[in-house]
Image 1 (cartoon, helix red, strand yellow):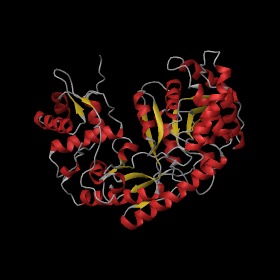
Image 2 (cartoon, one colour; image 1 turned 90 degrees about the vertical axis):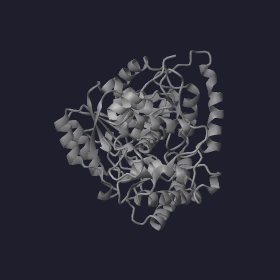
Image 3 (cartoon, helix red, strand yellow; image 1 turned 60 degrees about the horizontal axis):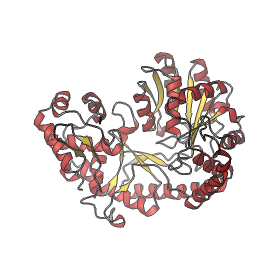
Image 4 (cartoon, one colour; image 1 turned 180 degrees about the horizontal axis):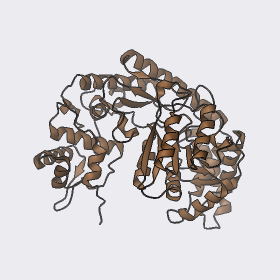
Amino acid sequence: MITRAIGAGSLVRDLGNWQDVGDVRPAYRALADGIRLLVHDGRVPQGVALPSERELASALSLSRTTVTSAYSTLRDEGYLRSRQGARSTVAMPAGTRARGAVRATAALGNDAIDMSNASLPAPAAEIEAAYGLALRSMSAYLSSHGMEPIGVMALREVIARRYRERGLPTSPEQIMVTSGAQHAMRLLLGVLTDPGDRVIVDHPTYPNALEAIRRHGARPIPVPVRPEAGPSGGWDLGALAGAARQTAARTAFLVPDFHNPTGLCLDEDGRAELARIMYDARMTLVVDETMVDLWLDAPPPAPVASFPAGSSVVTIGSTGKSLWGGLRVGWIRADRELIVRLAGARSGVDLGTPVMEQFAAAHLLSDVDELLDQRRAQLREQRQTLCEALDEQLPEWQYTPGQGGMSLWVRMPEPVSTALAAIGPSHGVLLAAGPRFGVQGAFERFVRLPYTQHPDMLRNAVAAVADAYVQVAQGGDLEASRLVV
């Protein structure tokens, strides 16, 4: 059996600044914590073989003894599995129990609160009802092969109608249904870019988009998003125009609708300017609209594609954030020519999104307004709880609540995000470190805090983060940050 392997160079790149100046941890412990954090972030998948001890020691300019000790620590904690004569492969411990946490873990039986994922639980009754209706809608497809590379017409009609209701004329022929937004992103990268191409991204941005760009062999070109500019702005459009001129990028991937992770929303004037910049640069703009229904303070302006200069704007949508991540249905809106090209390229990847899920999504989206109102009310309450807990327990941390979305992008006084994420599990909380949302190790002073948990969980989570932050900021012994299986 062939085992996937990660090269030493790739692992070193992902580790970034794994041991800061003044770090009190032994080098082997810091290295083990850095690799463990990559496993929890998903940047080093389970089952992948790590570089040999000799290769990693050479790449990091460390002694082989240090790497051996780091691997041994990870093996003892359940993060590595080894066989005689073979490389060690990454694993996840059967149960990650937090040690040393008191307040935050009491309600969970010592299981860490997961603040690394910005997703809502399913609306169970509505999902079950939608699947029941979908099952009854399947009869027309059971006599056929059941493969729909562009998507079932019932769902494409519902999606097109929802675009028209937002002021963007759309026909079903302009819609391709995908297996989630990430699948849509990968299909578009395959058609719009070549390995080595540059792709402009907002910075910070959705980490899986960065990973998709890198895996395709393209290079992300970051353009700043600054929350301090206010909830209606934040995008440095001047820098974006400069990047478009100077890099010869053919594609940009941006999240103007309740941006992940900041929650910001690009205002109407900014959208018109963005469309003009893309048109002048003869670039294709891919707009991620997966958060568009999660407005909390005010609905978003008109879609970027509706502006006069926006003829080369492609949009990605999904049910994953607003409804349920387990319903793996997304879509692409584009001109018909691009949809045809995507269909041709898709045949080498898959033969279509499962029909059952498409019918379930069609039933949900055909009458979803009341459910979305409930989801938004839930998020407003939880956002308020998170803000109050931060103001009380971490008053020196700074944040600008966006107009929607599912998370706060929080600035800390010290650049300790990676260390905080590493030690968080020992205090009962899992965090996504700020650099995960950036390019080349940026955002060590930031951490994303989603408000998708129950209010009581959010209060406990902030208490746990505050405890962990005190230890990290004071330079405490991070040896205690190990996860115990």
